[in-house]
Length: 120
Ligand SMILES: [Zn+2]
Ligand SMILES: [Zn+2]
Image (cartoon, rainbow, N blue to C red):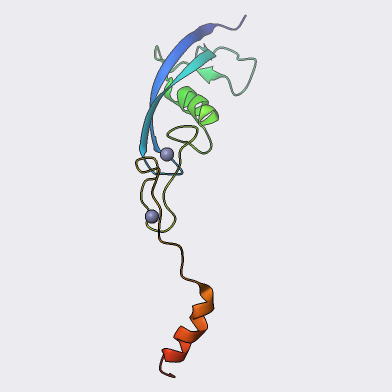
């Protein structure tokens, strides 16, 4: 048995980010299970990368950071079925589901319009 302190428990971490679809700010909480053995300085650790006590202190931050990164969603969404933003004007389609634009102009008229343009 390596001498040290076994840290075991649950930590709640506050998260802040934005929805990849509509850019709404998301705040969420992540619960992480933590279990890590911190060995006393000077004691022979079985693993080289074992966490070590710093004096009487345990630095949980690196441990929590690693866990959070592992648990973070790759593409956070404000909700599963977020409608996102209008690709034309950027309006939030969640707030305005009926949002629509005039049908795009008939491309057959583009040639005629080109004729009106002065030759550069
Ligand atoms: Zn969203
Ligand atoms: Zn729009």
